[in-house]
Structure formats: C-alpha cells, structure tokens
Length: 259
Image 1 (cartoon, rainbow, N blue to C red):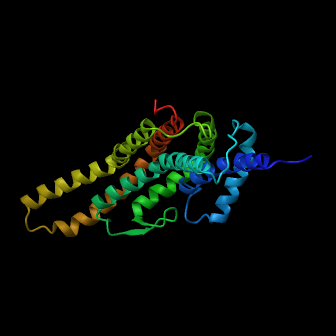
Image 2: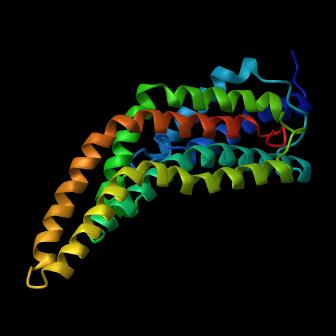
Image 3: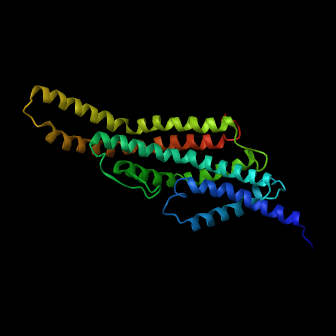
C-alpha cells in the first residue's frame, strides 16, 4: 500500500495540532506546569494524553503544518491551550494574593520563600495556602476535570475551524477580575480579626501612652493571625471548590463567547 505526501501530512497534523494545544495547557496549568516537573516529563504526558484522546477528536483539516495556514492553526492551538491553563492558574494566584494580604496584616510581609510551582518569592502564608490548595485540588480530582475541559474544547473549538474571539478573551479577562474578590473572601476572616486587634491597641495606646504597644501588639497580632488561619482552614475547601468550578466553567465556555 502506497502512501502519498498528502496522507503523511494529514497524519502529522492529526497528531501535532492536538499535541500543541495539550502541551500549551500543561505548560501553564497548576501541578502540571510546576517548575519541579521536568519539561521532558511534561512533554511525555502531553504526548500520552494526545494519543489517548485522539480517537475522540473531530476530524483535523488536511493542511501542511509548515504552510502559512498551518502556522496560523498552530498559533490558535497554542493560544487556546494557554487560555485554558491560565484560567485555572488564576485560582492559585488568588490564594497567593490572599496569603500576601494576611501576611502583611500579621507583620510577616518580610517572610517569603520560593514557590516551587512558579519559581518566584511568595509570602510564607501564601505558600501555605498554595500547598493546601494543591493537595485539595488533587483530592477532588481537579486535574481530571481540567483534562475533561481540555478534551471538550476540541469540540467547541475544532482544530482549523474554531478560534478564540474577542468575547472569549474578554471572558477570561473578566474571570481574572474575580481573583481579587476571591482573595478577599479567603483573607477576610484573618484580616478582619487583625484589624480589630489593631484598633483595640490604638485605643489602649491613647488611654495608656506609657504602654509599649509595639512590644505587646506584634506577638498578639501574630498569634491571633495563626489561630484564625487554623480555624478558617475548614472554609477553604468550599471556597476553593467554588473558585475551581468557576475557572473550569470559564474555560469550558471558550468558543461560545463566554456565555
């Protein structure tokens, strides 16, 4: 049986373009895109996922990947994969922002460590939230839901036909604005309690000027902050589930104008 060059190009495109979208998502998504995951392992996972989901995907257009049209399709797949991964990454950015807000209120803004997922310095409280959120994300199969959304995107945004439009990009940007509201909801119990303590010490310093407020206030604020964090951890799971569901919904609506 003889194979023509057109057949070979079709086979290459059938495997290459889904691989580009999946690899782009894995490069930026939480857990998969962490700095401690070697690039080689990430590429192997992308190749295995591509091979597994290949029978479930719609037909791929017969285009030369090196032609101008093929390069445009490759760029589209790259953008779609990055958009899906970015929507989920915002959930973890929300927790880092919440941890930074709490750390500043507790007087621990100077205490930071390298985040192994992103390779940047984050406050220790933010890193604590990220570690807990990562474990919870894996516990309720968030990584499997993310892969399901990615596979569904091949039907809502078929290769060579579907592309991200203006409404899709605006929907992702709108979801990004919810990061600040989500961070505020996570940090509100600790920040509110610390604010009340600071107000109390302000009243005490006015009524008893000889009292060393800084010497007494810092350990009290620090201790109260940790106590509130421990008690508030029970509410982190429903908040994380709500944020993750919102991110997955935003990613699944790509190709539908965000509606």
